[in-house]
Amino acid sequence: MITFESVSKLYPGGTQAVTDLDLQIATGSFTVLVGPSGCGKTTSMRMINRMVAPTGGRVLIDGQDVADIRAVTLRLGIGYVLQNAGLFPHRTVLDNIATVQRLLGLSKAQARTKAHEAMERVGLDASLATRYPAQLSGGQQQRVGVARALAADPPILLMDEPFSAVDPIVRLELQQEVAHLQAEIKKTIVMVTHDIDEALTLGDRIAVLAPGGVLHQYAAPIDILARPATDFVASLVAKDRGFRTLSFETLTGLGTTTLPASGPGGLIDMSALSPGWSVQVNRDSGTAAWIDADGAVFGPHPLVPADASLRTGLDAVLASPTSAALLVDGTGNIGSYFTLADLGPLLRPNEQARA
Amino acid sequence: MNWLLDNLPQALGLTVEHLYLSLVPTLVGVVVALGLGLAFGNRPRARAIITAVASAIFTIPSLALFVVIPSIIGTQILDPLNVVLALALYSTSLLVRTVFDALDAVAPEVLNAAEALGYSHARRRIFVDLPLAVAPLAAGTRVAAVTNVSLVSVGAVIGVGGLGQLFVSGYQRNYPDQILAGIIVILLVALVFDRVIAVTARLLTPWLHQGASAASGDGKRRRTSPAPAAPAPQGLAASGREAK
Image 1 (cartoon, rainbow over the protein chains, first blue to last red):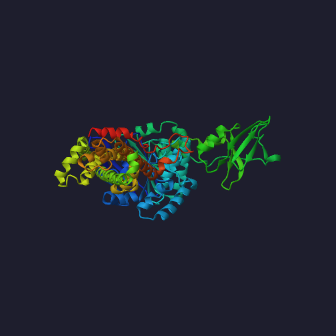
Image 2: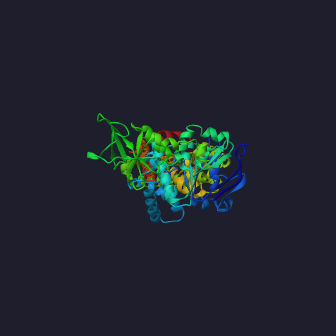
Image 3: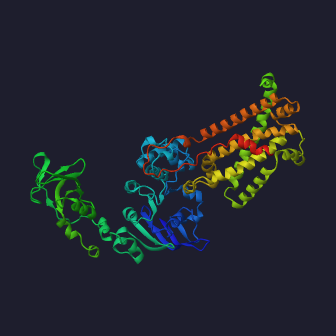
């Protein structure tokens, strides 16, 4: 548990970076501090590992004031991922990742073994081990940054806008990877970002900070979207707010239609849905192709897992030429489909959904 | 050339003396400048004072320094230590600014990372800042070394000057061949010094010589530390000191 107790930071010039911040970050949670630049999010995060000292209040880790812990000791127990990876240009990928273990006193060989493990965990090819950072792409560098932070297996991980400097495709990939990692390793992650989308995708708790370091809302993503506490939060999530909310809704209660048996060549006759159409499932790629009366093929279209979000389900239907999508149930069986009409009852106004 | 071939043992002795007189001050300069740089690089006040003092020392003519040093530290006028000390002062003055600049050139995000990962200040200075400063420092050291090689000969005027003594006696005896021999050997020594430092620096900075990556394409590849500055032309370094 990381606790901010009425923490303030007033810089000598009179700039109020953080104002009376109270925050409790549960162990094992993924907390995102989000807000525009100058909202004190990075400043607040850096108080956790004492890179910034508060001018008022205190920060506690598991009940202990961080000010009472030697800065170097404290930091060796907290992983840190920087915006531009911040790799050491004079060390190979492997030695960059081995840094913390070396600082902790492990031998070079031991530290490197651990570093190899960390590389594997974040999906870095072993052949990159002997490269220098300058020989890597931005995405690879950021992966190394994540591996370096995780190598010593710290219980807490701080991430300072870790994905803002990579291109959108790599960013998405890294975000998914981190989400996946977190599901596995269950660290206490505190991430800073100015990207509300990223915050909503990754965080289980989001702290929205306004300029001056004023906390406006600290809640689960769905609550930030559905019930913004202030106008400031509302303006931050205004874009596509209704549609985004669907990401947090499930397909529970969806009415489906049983799929007819497949005919010759695995072709399923879908005349009942739309005259002349049939569909063919490709299990290997998890997709389906729609074929019209003239034999024209539309696809591949994704199959929708039963535990997908309402947003995924709606998107699949909207993209389908027949306004229908095939559903994969929990056992991997593809036995039914649903249409836009089936989704209708689920697309209720938010307030009702949570009444 | 004839003189050189006829007097090889003497030339060799003078060369060894010349090497000693120029190498030792260079090494002292590197060590002292590094110490000052690492200790005071992030203290603006101390740094300003050091830079000012260094500039002042650098403006003292070498001959004057050779002559003044004995009266300050109590050595004999003919003691080679006078030359070594004077040149060490020049090297330090020249290099301390290079060290400051080289340490400044280390990317802030790298220092930030080091701090966040748990480096103590001293440890960071030695294991992060120092290796990253090697390349620019080496460029400065090449200038300092070559400058020393040429300046040692001025010491001949006070009787300690390695190969510079060939100039004095060649001039007194109106024997150009001897002067030419001195110039040739000094040039060779300077060249060898320059190469040795350049190669050493290269060996110490393997990360700067790996060639661009095959990866990338997202244009976000980290910039490496600045490549070592082109070596200052030796002629310039030497002639800059002719006035001394």
